[in-house]
Image (cartoon, helix red, strand yellow):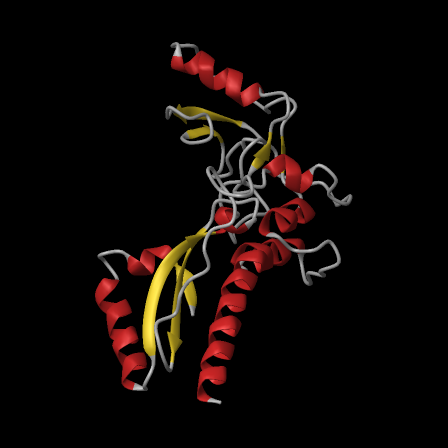
Length: 226
């Protein structure tokens, strides 16, 4: 099973543990952990809770394969979208926030209207939300306009107004690339629903890593029985 990482927080811990006890009562050995997609080759920081039960033994989650100190570096936003197929441009404008909220990082806080954030092209993306498509869609800022603006605000500069020059929102296909979908994968329905399909999905590479571990361990158990 897979869900948001908040299910493992103190607020919902009782619910999670009750669900696990119910599964154990059916004869499964159950454990859970939170995995970050970026650690498995997905160009996106996305933490998700996984719960796995086996009849025999305790499930061993796949070891991270990407990131600092590992065999492979993280896959970055630039890696993911530089050759993304053409798609209809996202029409949601990037507009300066009237009352900007500052944080130390220009990729946090709120410099523009909506909850979309400027992405660091040299890192995995921030989490792609299911509500993307409009002002919640993350931003490509290749000329670092918002980075420079953030620096100005941090030094006491005045807030700007109007449309941010040189910035745009991610297209659907770019979001799909960041989530790890192949370009051949078809999304259906209105564009807003297609963005939701991307944002609601488990990143395919992360799902594959967990499923490969499940298959390997179940096969080992079957061989032991045989």
